[in-house]
Image 1 (cartoon, rainbow, N blue to C red):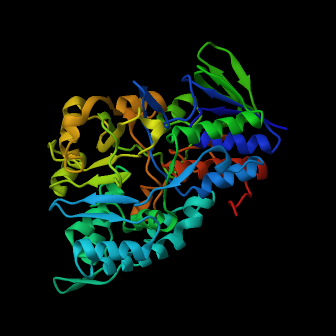
Image 2 (cartoon, rainbow, N blue to C red):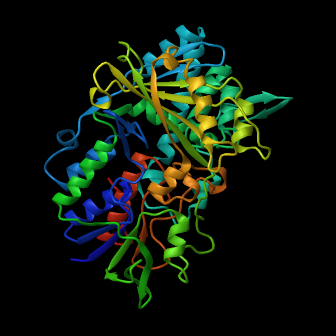
Image 3 (tube, rainbow, N blue to C red):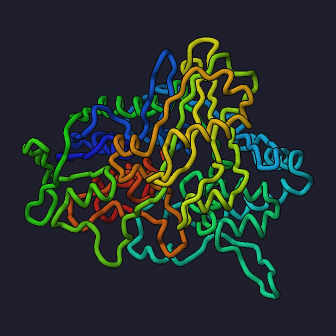
Length: 496
């Protein structure tokens, strides 16, 4: 039985802790804040309750597997999973709106044909077929296996089978998601639908590789899910599973260093000068934090995937509305910008510009989220990690944009709260409150994440800033990979 110190209580760290404990190890989790869950936080006021982090769950099979492998009670016995249908509603710049059924390719094709015109659905359906091929080519190396030592193969090879496109007497293939939208979908609304999958992750679709086609494929193939009571309930369930497996927790315990002895990690040191010895250390922290914890012991070497420094964060506006949610309201509505190019320039361009943002409006209709005959609504948008204008100004702009989806919003508004990238930084420790992106192939490897193993034997990285990257599902996969590497050793070849 090994002693394992886990730094941080984010979802990747908790997933690893539960799996390691059930394998017979003595696991202790040290969290600098006063609670668990990382970005999965909850804000409550006047009987209203809001998720302040991820609000929907893709690939619930990741957490179903966690609960199967760590106890007798399945995930559904611990939380109530609800399939979101429609998966999303989209309001485009020209005012056209479409609701997309959950996990139904035929239903999506029909909905797009009806809303956008004959042929639109077929073009999107054909795109999803190609996206599935990219998924099949990258699923195991990007999600289910430790990062390959020859990761350059993933960096240099574009897995998306782009359709040949004739342009200026030349035949070209789309290399970016924006080119896929322009050349293969051939409708600005379909292009906006596609590009939003990158933008929602804080990525510029103009330079994001075509391999990002796996993001819409995953949603359409595996569905979108909500946890009744809010996504914080998922964090609670995983935390309680850790407790049931005898994982120890110390909150308010700030780790300031990783100890090293005889060339390997040997424990952690805390802000008060005390230490906890361990045979393995699992760090669920952002790259800058890990660098500080291992000062003098580089964890990445030349030729390895470098740590990402994401540039984008999230601004979230929590709205308390009087009056009940209307029957048939979509859980998630995406209100697309009036000027995508200006929005992308404002987010990713060298010159600062103010532009109409794309805003996601979340209206879960969960009776636990608001007092009777009232509604809790959450607005989110992508912002630079260091916004160049006041967050209150941005929030007011978001509310104006959201009125395209909720026309009576201002008349019903009781109060609002703003959650900024600085709040994310406080909860997660990520520099500037930036949010890690899922690992993607191609693009020279700039969207890959560092290996879970490090150059310091006995030290492992877990969570959104390590392989396979950001997102709730990816965090759970990261936990499974780290547990496998510790339990089975360096010959571990991935989950089955």
